[in-house]
Image 1: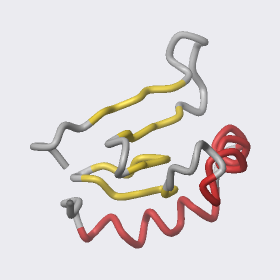
Image 2: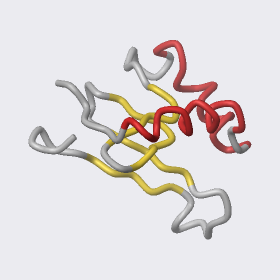
Image 3: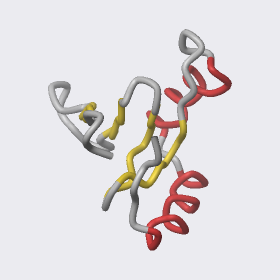
Image 4: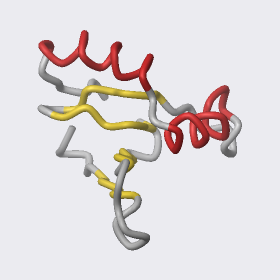
Length: 85
């Protein structure tokens, strides 16, 4: 399934990959190279009109980490259905 995204976000996503916040960098160490049960994750992926921090197409899972948040809001997880992105 092809993911629709705003092409204007592609360059900005590249810049965000270079600047990662500490929580993103630490989580990426566990997700990259299919270390998480063999699932492939992408970092700073444009999805629709957003750039999500991590995306796994097989799981249809997108994660956005919050830099300064309370414990309850430290990670926002969005799941897209087959009819979504």
